[in-house]
Image 1 (cartoon, helix red, strand yellow):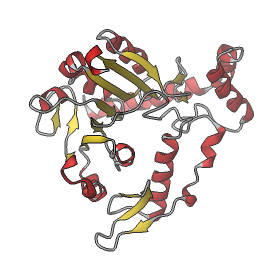
Image 2 (image 1 turned 90 degrees about the vertical axis):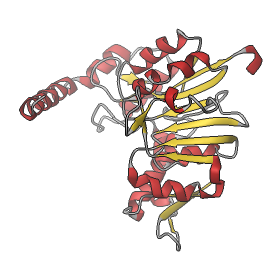
Image 3 (image 1 turned 180 degrees about the vertical axis):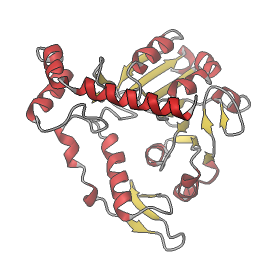
Image 4 (image 1 turned 120 degrees about the vertical axis):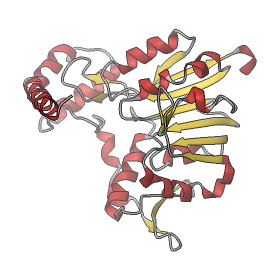
Length: 296
């Protein structure tokens, strides 16, 4: 695809997006204003209360409680030995990239904490859906590792896949207290194995199979699933937390794919309001689980 074509396509897509935004509030009220669904009604109430907010809302969950998470309330420290900035979470230091600023760390950490609030559509684990003592966990798109750190004491092993080299030093510092219990992989996870990427099926071919897989890879979650078909079909005990808000049909697609191989499906609470065409409201995280009788 030529640069000229890419530029023309991007321009046309932006124009289409702007056109679709026109009248979006009216369409939402027309299509959902009389809904009796409690979660839909919560979003509608937020939209009605805030006529000043431009729609779609985007990556800010459309709820009042989000304002409880203020960056300025996040204490930031600086490690004397490494010079890296960190926040303290559950008694553990979570380190950030070397070029981070205090304000940047505060903003990033507050978003991470907000996303794992019990009310959040981005919550990776929830009521009745969690990891068990001794599980093997996989974290794809590990970023700062804060979510993995929230589970690390329960896991027997954790694999963190993070292709961004800027995160490797802070991740090593964050998980140094756990030694060989944590492996940090400078790789993406996808549908096939290359120099910079591995499929989970290939990676775990000669390793114990994971019991929990979490993926947040900016819309490439389907590629991760496609590269884990053996694991998905043959694991006797497996839970998945996969982001589904990046692409508007991901939740229904993943739900169908995973139900087809015997998984029970649920989801995080609430919605994101990201798109300018239906479905306007997107589930944030798909939860999937499958247990054989012997694994229960």
